[in-house]
Amino acid sequence: MLENEVATLIIETLNLRVDPSSIDPQAPLFNEGLGLDSIDALELAMSISKKYGFQLRSNDEKNANIFASLSSLSRHIESCRTT
Amino acid sequence: MNHLPLTTSADPERTVAWQNSEPRSLSRLLMDADTLAGQLPDLSCLINLCENRYRFLVGLIAGILQGQKIVLPPGRANEDLKRLQQRYDSIYCLIDTDTRLGDIEIHRYVDPVCSDPIEQAIPEVPSAKPLIELFTSGSTGKATPQQKSWGTLWEGARLTGERLGLDNLAQAAVLATVPPQHMFGLEASILLPLRWGLSVSSEQPLFAADIVTSLEKLPTPRILVTTPLHLRNCVEEGIKLPQTTFILSATSTLSPTLAARAEKQFDTQVLEIYGSTETGAIATRRPAVEADWSLLPGITLDQETKGWRVAAAHLAESILLSDRLKKTSDHHFILLGRDSDMVKIAGKRASLEDLNLRLQSLDGVEDGVFFLPEQRSASVPRLTAFVVSNIWDEQEISQALREQLDPAFLPRPLFKVERLPRNTTGKLPQSALVTLFRQCGAKQ
Image (cartoon, rainbow over all chains, first blue to last red; front, side, top):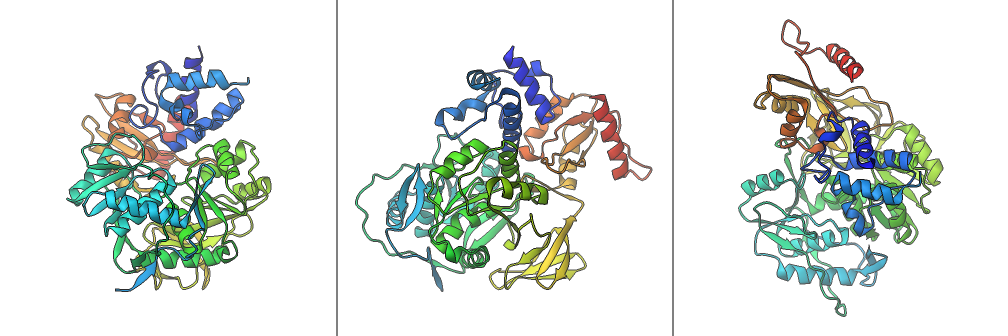
């Protein structure tokens, strides 16, 4: 399932020592939740573009929610992926 | 008291900012600031948290007009705001998003209704009064306030702008990927435009694709103000940037290789600023072609036993740097590194000793230490930590740290170990930590 795959990608890219299944799909990835910051966002953006063949954007207002949770990020990847 | 103008150019029709490709004139800016000034609470300190750079600018001017002190906090965490509330009784936040903040008075920015601009005189700003307070970036708790007068900022912008050749780029438009609440962003995206008559984009793009879109909305000549991190992202994503006169980078040292790749890929010059919150910009270089930093005119560097001291006519006092450096001529130097206790991650500084203390004082943590591993040259440095605990697992310790530290300093990863390789005197030799790091990494 894509959500698990994305959880693994996050953990591998950011060198987090958590179990993929322990990430709550609805919890915020930044600040409170996993405590990620904008450096992590950029690192993730690069991994995502390598793996799924598209570039993340945040200019778009609707994209403000991409990183809201694992579940929203996975949905976004599903709709934009080219590979 | 002496005064300086808020901005150099008095032409009311001059474009000062771009909101979604729409120009905002100087007269519109002054009118919006005047309107906002009339609505602000009657309190003495304004925390300007506006994310849209035009609104930030309006908020800054409105606060100045009302004689309020402008406070730019180290972060937006509730802890940061709480600390400011303890420091000042009469304080509130100006915000332009619907972010919820803790228990602090807020004034929400509402875009003023556009009416026909009335000509306004350029405000005169007292030059010596402490006007803006910002913080040396650091792990929470250690951030120390720095007072900046308009005179210091104005003169710093003059020196930097002359070096960058802004006298020939009066119509240039600036796009910044850094927030205006920190020193580099304040100097490069607010002060340089005000001092040199440039315009600035209201946007703060993060991803490479966003930077392209934001730049495309601006007229030429364009200047991109950014960091090595954003630049690396742009280079590695293989994008093409719209024609940009130069890229200005700061917050952490740019590798010459990355700078050279960026110059080639974007057909532009990459210039770098060296400075700190305490000093502002003090030197520049073009890392693709030179290793030496050139001091801005009038800035002196003198060696003392404890390190290098910076002085300049526009700085209220001389400042001791936390970097080690070597002078190569009266006006040039090379950076050798940082005091071994200081780490700098994504432009934020922290003392390892302070981080270790915080880790060791967590309930249930018996021993612990932060460690900065050797990095591959192009990647962003991240701390790691080794922790001894009988009660908590790695996730629980991480969670506890999250409440204490800026995310930049959270260990990635954190390793739980049986014991730390302390020697007979209780010290932790760097070599033992390197070995431990290798062992933990291999087990992963």
